[in-house]
Length: 363
Image 1 (cartoon, rainbow, N blue to C red):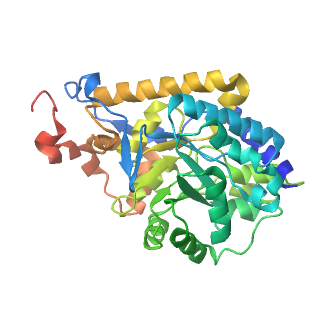
Image 2: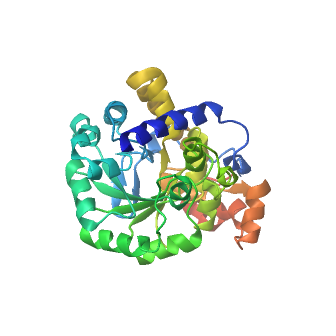
Image 3: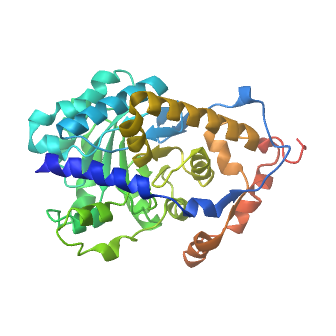
């Protein structure tokens, strides 16, 4: 049954990707254009450092799948693409492996195909410390993701209905594994309050994983005989809303959920993320065109990321958080309601003086 569910998730997620389009709250974030702020391309580095980790690029293939023959082949192809481009990669939830060890190869194929890459294992918040260690060991993982999916579980016919233990379990896992723990949502966002709680639990990094990409409320509704929970399809906060809400919370954050192109990655980094994760679009690309198509797409994105950083005067991904940005529309209204000051973002480059290098041609 778990294998069937994993295959259903891939099918419905791919269908959603083909239907996505139109406005996204990332479009409500724009850069103030400073025409003389640019650098030489040779000065720009894509290396990003956060939470004691170092990635060669501020982009990863985020958690997707595993647990069936079909999804094992997908994980193989994703791992090859990660190996060829140098991007970190995460498995999907390893719950299927805990239920049936015969599907272990559908996850471990990632390490076999990507022996020196940065790989993240993925478990849910109900996992024991022993299961978390098994997941890390199977993949020789460099980090462990714990996903939070209360809304997905609520809509899922066979889903969990007991959530009170999740925080204490996360705290035990953080203390009980030998790799950094990254806690992520699955598409409904992490609020400022949740981020503060995760920080206090000892979590090293949080992936806000907001709405705007794959919608697991819709996916689980599609798996039902009747769409009893369709009213939850719009639940949650967008990724840019979560990033703005995270301002001032002392925990590094990653941006995933609705990333459509390199400009969205740069917008996410400018709003405080240390890196961005992509799932649905990369899944669609590898299913439609195979490994060569995904390698070409990721390579193009990395080149375009460097080009955008060069134009914006950002030597490193972290420097993008010094660039002036404007917040518009519903996203600005969200910030007003949450007490988030946005006007300072439009002039923050002035605060860095000479450390921001060139603004308007003046050093």
